[in-house]
Image (cartoon, rainbow, N blue to C red; front, side, top):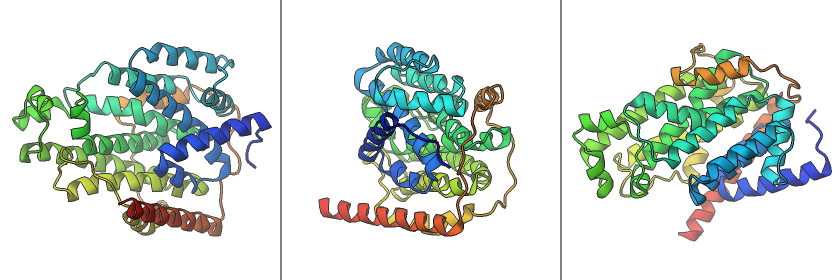
Length: 346
């Protein structure tokens, strides 16, 4: 059965849900495929991550110290009277989430704030592990996954998602003075980072760099797929949906000629419906062997979970096949309605 929420905790959760519904539509929709026992804690987790990310984006690096103080209070069991902090503190306690994981997330935000650049793909992966692999690992812990093989797959999924985001947002990031592409790849393509940032423009050379990044993302998705198929049955389709939708971002970039400078690739609601309808069945039964080894930059996350004994494992993570089907249909319908709204706005 789902963990009981007090009236005050349920009110906090409702506010977290509203926050994500307004700004993270894909996650909100995909989360409907998760059992309630996991969906509610996941909402609390994502809300805290979202609030922390927004604080850095809006108020700059000065927020980092404040966020670290808030995290320390959360782990001390004395969260500030803030909705996201209270909700996150509850799941930290109930699911024994190692502090190393959200600490690494904040470290990734710090790298963003300082405008760090990455000399090679390993550096980009290290950044992606912190800002996305951490979330994958925390989600796995919520599902009762603490074995190294499936945790490694969860980190891979987060890294793949982040690489897709980087490939999609090259122009948007450049106009904000940020560059996440491997510097050595740019040099091999004859692209000077400073010249590009001064006047971001698409070129065949840049398209080649973006293609390489998307290929790297696809490799992480492949490594992650076997782990997703070995999650508790009630969780596979929600996590699988999130992975499928992010991978489709990369395919949309490719369909646009690998030009993510002139415009931002957006996957339509209709396309999302097709992706989920044709792809989710692939997670029903484990077929591929687990890769078993965490990406080198993410080993510390897996080790942190191994060092932390669970206090209370999530219950109610299984789901009957017909209930899974109902959730799938609900999400497909939601994305169709989102597509209709997009057409109306257009």
